Image (cartoon, rainbow, N blue to C red; front, side, top):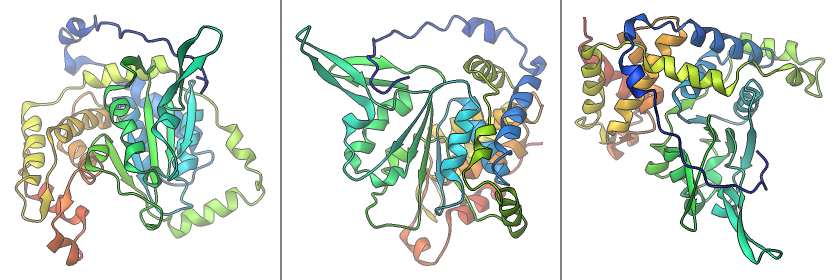
Length: 344
């Protein structure tokens, strides 16, 4: 979708499939298409990216559950490149927004523009009106610009001058930030962080992976290899994957297990802020996606444990005492998960 395209407000279609979904036996759903689609996407991206399998899996989990992802890591570990390659594998629109200190909300969502011919104002869409949106260095924009993302990330719509404009599906935001450099950056507000389904913390590649990177690009200084990545999945297939994941079976005991994990974050002496019910829903949805991408139509406790850190690490805050003592969010969350009895 063009950045300057005029947007006409639409009304979302009613979900006529709700009754149909409820009549389906969840334990009989065939999730093989989800697994095959995920493998196709990963195979394309792996033509360029070496390693980072966990990041790719978690990006696809978020894509298939309608969530958004925050990638955090030092410069040069392929955060932006991976996001761009993922967008190339989807036969849909893509836009990139480079966040800077002088970026204004209208630069993101768009603004009414006076039409001299009609003597009226027409809304010109901003770059957020796309399907896959890469927000690079999200923490370099001030709070007023970050606030422009609140509505669109949660409700998939933008309201300007009393008129609401709905986003086309899929709508997937991938944001990046550098945790080391603090000059010229702004801390993301908790309300903004909570709108990300996952916060994926990236590490340096291993020695073997770095050797593979050098060998792969020794004769590709101009990045020709990136152009070999092709679209292998459509918006319709993404919507179908989301429908199948919704039908993955999860036992009542596992729902209680999720609730116990999230509730424990609110009563932990090491945490100043615990996770909200939005975190519980995130754990449930993403655990279903993990199962589907593994070819299973039922959730296991291991699925929940796998997504617990990326789904919770940005929704909790350590107490100042624990931060001063050098504790990490991962240590506290791992301890919480270990203490909760696993359903049998």
